[in-house]
Amino acid sequence: MFNLLRFNQADDAFDDLFRGFLMRPVRMDSAQELQIKLDVRENDKNYTVHAEIPGVKKEDIQVSIDGNQVAISAEVKNEKEVKDDEKVLRCERFYGKVSRVFTLAQDVDNESAAAKYNNGVLELTLPKKAAAMSKRLTIS
Image 1: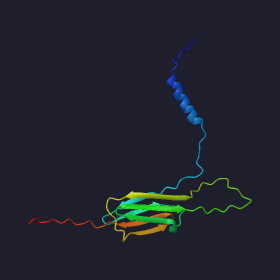
Image 2 (image 1 turned 90 degrees about the vertical axis):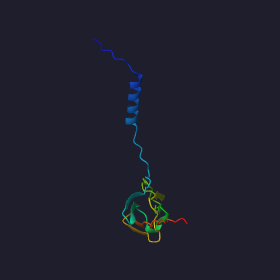
Image 3 (image 1 turned 135 degrees about the vertical axis):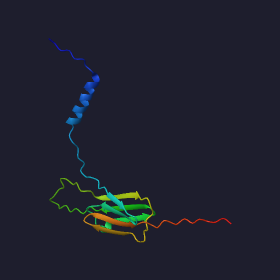
């Protein structure tokens, strides 16, 4: 005997979508963008920030603090040397400028803030600014 199946055009389109998706070649970008990844911790007195910025010289990193807003920027410079008899087949390292801005819950005392850079990790110690004490006025 013959088996009859009902044809549903939506099912066919769905199958075509997956077939096309699975058969496409995978495209890889030639250069990945560098992203500054952060860990931010706090205690009663300080914020501690660890920022991953690999492949950057400490002279090429800038940190600015404005109240409770912190901005980190870095520039990765292209220092490639290609000889006359060579050609570059693939270049996946990122060269350019990256930045990250974030806001903290409390203002930072930028006079006593400190920064260290070691093994591709920037460590910021950001002391919290003392909260202004409120004063109650007596009405005369």
